[in-house]
Length: 426
Ligand SMILES: *Cc1c(COP(=O)(O)O)cnc(C)c1O
Image (cartoon, rainbow, N blue to C red; front, side, top):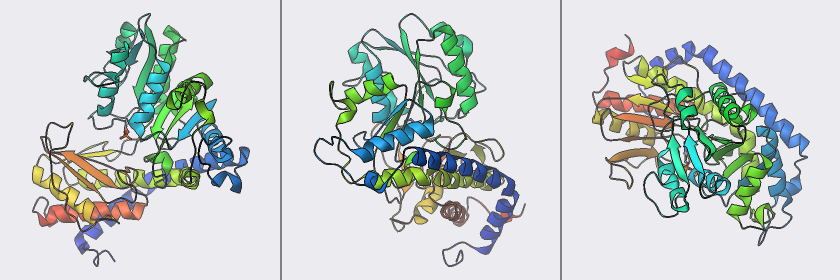
């Protein structure tokens, strides 16, 4: 079948050798998935998820038992007091903006303890001027950068905390930065440090891409809120939209009153027909996340052994599903993305081309042939066309798909003369 799908024997054999060496890593990933699968099942049982939960409401959405039960399930899985899980939360950025805007008041200061936040949050915060930003509402921003080794800079954090500091945000995943992703344990240490200085400071963790990669989540280490997108890990590839905020009752209530209206809060918000995909997606998420994770580890090893620099490297522990590969060559970056696109279940026949996307200072190439538009728990890759010509890729609903996608990307690099067959044997 690999030959039929365009993979030459030497590439296939190279992939097999790498898979063989990764057996122990894959087994460890499967054990985490097994643990998280049972954790989710336990929450389904405790909240007595029933067939009635799978039908939706319309209009105001009063007494939507499916929606309300799902939120209890999320709270159970993430071990929080409460949860807001809604299709009306349009994406991860919206969920993060909602958590911030509803829990900060004019005169408060927001502190990022993990350096520069995700690109889209710059406009939410007002680092880049934007309509409706926190800054327009008189909420100021401070930032403590990470140390050069990627760890928290505790001196910087304590020096940036002042009497107006109301909320500290910590981004778990590196996103599209070259730093390391923070482990849940490291985040826990930072939270303990912050709470020791001022126990009343709220800590929010941007949990995007991190869900179910480890056995525990930052909410089990004192985070007041964890926030993420349902078209990433916790949607399991099935949720077609949505975001979540799980945390302290008061924080979640604030978010609900902001999402709908003061006085209404969680009581309204019809789920329409979307709940089966939310339940089933969450149920599948640990195994889907494990597939993406194995794919990332496989890719790191495939490209590291060919001499490319990869982050994380082939051996280190993982705390999110993103893999970066640096090509130092635009042609190789483009070939990689073409190989991933050609491996997609949808739109495999289209050719990705670099283009000038709004918000970026260079052309960007993106590869994605998804069932859910923009979903990045599905196999997807993108990279800015500027030195060092790195690609960031993530996702994969099944490991065989990611494996094939990575082998196909290698096939494209070989065809372009960016890698030589001899390299596969050295
Ligand atoms: C994806 C992501 C976001 C934003 O989510 P969108 O759904 O793209 O708006 C925020 N933070 C991190 C770390 C992310 O990975």
